[in-house]
Amino acid sequence: MSMVCRIFYPTRVLTGCALCLWLGLLAGCSSDDQIKPLKPLRIATGTWEPFVGEDLVRNGPMAEMMSTILVDLGYVPEFQYYDWRMVEKHLETGYPGLAFPMIKSEERMAKGFKFSEPMHTFDYVLFYLKDRADEFNSIKSLQDLMNSGFKIGRIRGYARLREIASKENYIDISSEAEGFALLGSNADAADGKQIDFLLESRSVGLATLASEAVASDRDDFMYLGQNGREQLISQVSLRVMVSPKVDPDLLPKINKAIEHNKDFFDSLRARVRSHSRDTAWLSAPDGEIIWGYPDSTGDAASIMIVRNSRVLINQWGSSYTGETDYETRPSGTDRSRVKLLSGPTRGKVVWVEDRFITLEH
Image (cartoon, rainbow, N blue to C red; front, side, top):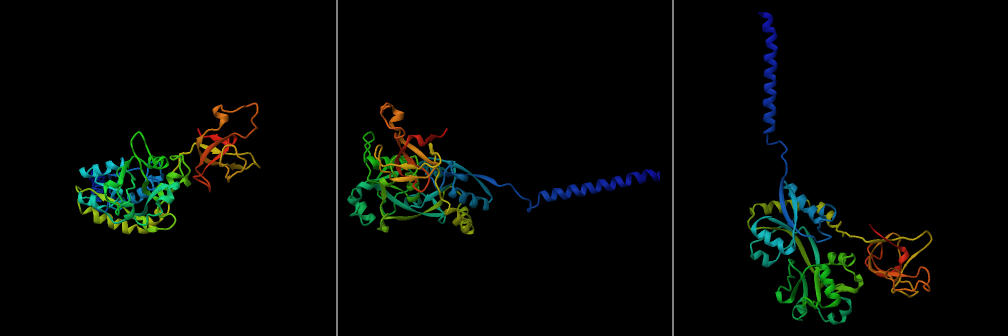
């Protein structure tokens, strides 16, 4: 009997210890100190390189700012990309409830939208065709422009300039590329569009001109205020826009997170950069120089091009189109028109010898 008791006694002790351990673990799991998973939150945005875009590293620096803000508040963002004109439509319904990067305007505030403190500030400028520079020299202020009758191309969903708020001054367009094409031709017979200026962020506009999205030479365009007259450049802040349907207590928390991460956001602002989809490479044997020419046949080169430069093909040379006499043409003289997408002369349009071009696959 005594032996039986000695056998069961340790068993009851172990059972009791196990029970205490289980209760302890249960208490730990229900503790307020337990790490909880971040809650997903859908955020509305749109492609606007180099600030934000699905093809950019981590969706771009502005998206990194938004992620940092929401992680501080216990959320993980799920970026939903819309056409810019649809962002506001969705926020009106409350789903999604937040959007970025957005411009604060009286029109939007009248609809009940709330705005955070600035995340980033950029230059809102008016691009135009360089050949028309003399025509626009008389414009000394945005008030002058508003009263001039000139038309401004505005991408649908973009905020208008604060100084030129009237809808009568604007014509809606679909993209930066369409805007620069309309400036280049100054007319679209099919749609009846005619614009004198394109409203865009300076960074976005210059990046677009240096990319394959625009076939024209980047130096064919300028923006008001580029050579002085800084009063023609508008400093505009980008913010988080909050739906009227969202709990108003969320906005002060967003502002606190923006202030808390100020130094980190400064580093992200410095990393604003564009993304290119390249089509070809320029390469040459050792000892040979790749020259860029202003035309298809002249002997005087205009620039020396860095090896392994990326390019957009604007116009294939006659050796590819069949418009040449193979019996008489000098070897290696056929040229194609390309736009440089990398290197110190990025954005320039020149003619290069076909033998240097290697298409990407």
